[in-house]
Structures are given as structure tokens and as C-alpha cells.
Image (cartoon, rainbow, N blue to C red; front, side, top):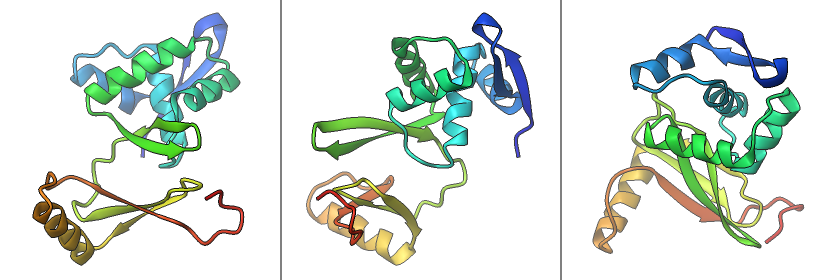
Amino acid sequence: MRKSTAVSGTHGAQVPASSGFSEQLRSLGIRPTVIRLCVLQTLAESDSQWLGGEEVFRRMLKRGTATGLASVYRVIKELEKARLVQREWERGLGGARAVHRLRRTQTPESTVRLRCGGCNASVEVVDEALHEGLLRAAQAHGMPAGGPFTVQLACARADCVR
């Protein structure tokens, strides 16, 4: 579990930070700025929920962190390049959008993400046989093998927009 502290942010706002995040950034040669720490903390607080850049920005503003949307996207891109943040594309009615979450260090290789194509609800399943079957199918059709799998389905929720 990470030890939480507070960092004095822009305009005196108290920004929750984590000494674990600070140490992680320093070990990668990245300066732990208030914005970087806030983006990491916001993604950590999302409890594995995938967030778009605008949602990260809104949550940071609610917390009292003065920043711009462009800065949030720039920091997310830096953290993704440093392999601290994962990016995935979600399809929606207006097209595809990038969503992000903290990269998990303990995710088993056989994790398969099941996602509804309508409402984007998702669940992760650890199933070795399912992962192996998807791997064989991908290889048989000339698709890159390895890495995580995301299977898009239609959920049975009544409020799902399909």
C-alpha cells in the first residue's frame, strides 16, 4: 500500500501525492512535479477504471489542482512512455477515444479483458485456457501474438446503449 502525503500545488491547493510515486518517477529519471503526481494519484484513485484525459483533468480540477487540459495530456503521454500508464482505445458513438489507467505490475499474463462495445463496461478474467485459445487463433490468422487480449461483446444490461 502506498503512503499518502500532500504536496502544495499551484495557488496553494493541497494535492494528494504518494512517496511511492515520487520514488518511482525519480528512479526513472523523471522529476516528480505536482502535475505528474496528481495525474498518477487520480489514476490510482480510479480503482482500475479506465479514464480519458478530460476525465483526469476534471477530477484534478475538483481536487483544486490548477492545470490545463494540454498539460494533462502531455503528462499522460510521458507516463505512458515511461510505462507507468497503460492506454487503450474505446469505440463510442463519436468515434474512438484513448483511455488510461495505471499499469499493473502484478497482472498475470493470462488476463483477458471482456468489454461491452455499447457501454464500455469491462471485466478482467484470468483464464489460462481462454488466453491460450485466443493466442492460437491470433497466430493462425497472422495477428501479433502475446500481450493482453481484449474481447468486445454486447452486455445484457438494460441501460446499455448498443
